[in-house]
Image 1 (cartoon, rainbow, N blue to C red):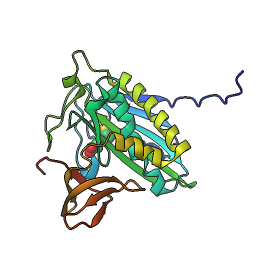
Image 2: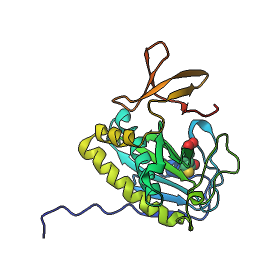
Image 3: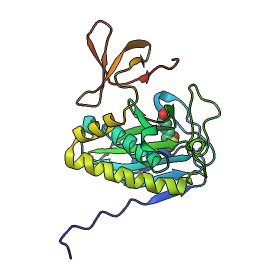
Image 4: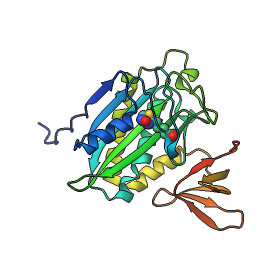
Length: 253
Ligand SMILES: O=C(O)CCCC[C@@H]1SC[C@@H]2NC(=O)N[C@@H]21
C-alpha cells in the first residue's frame, strides 16, 4: 500500500465498423444524457465533418475517433481543450517519427514535415443538469492522405518504412497521451499547456495570413495570448488577436 489514490480507470473505447461521424454520435449520446468519458472509434466514417463546416474524408486505415466527456469548467476554459488535444496528437505522431518533424499550427492542426496530417474538431453543448458536454473529434491520416483536399496534406504512412499503426492501436496511444496532457492542464493550468504547445508551434515569428470569414489579415504570428488567441503583429505595428479562423504560413491561401 503506497497511500496513493488509485489511478482513474481508462475510458472505454466503443468501436463502430461504420458510422456517419463519431462527433455526430457523441452529440447524439450527450443529448440522450450520456456523460462519458468514452472514446468512440469509427473504422469508416461516411459523413465525417471538419472545422468551419467542411467535410472530412476518412480514408481506410485512418483514425476517426471522438472523446465525449463532461466538465464543470466555464466554457472559455473548457475551450482550451483543443490545445490539449493537439498535444496528444503530437505525442501519438512522435511515437512513430522523430518529434522535430511534428509541429502544431494554430489553433490545432497537427503537421508532419510541415503538412497537415490530422484535424481536431471540438463541439460542445450544455447539459440539462448544468455544466458542459464536450466532444473532441480527432482525425489522423495514419494510412492515407485525403484524395480530395483543398491544401497539401500527408499521412503518417508516407513517413514510415513499415506499416502505420491500426486505428485500434492508435486510439489507445492517443487516449493515454490525452490523459497525460489533461493532468497537466488540471494540475498546472493553461500556461503549462500553452508553453508545451508553443514549443511545438508551426510558423511562429513567420509571416502569416489569417482568413477570418470574409476578412483576410496579414502579419507576423507572435505566439499565444493568455487565453489561446493567436497574437498577430500587423504591418503597422498594432497587435491583432485572432480568436477564430484559419492561418497560413508560406502557403497559397
Ligand atoms: O477540419 C479539421 O481539421 C477537423 C477535422 C476533424 C475530423 C474528425 S474525424 C473524427 C471526428 N468525427 C468527425 O466527423 N470529425 C472528427
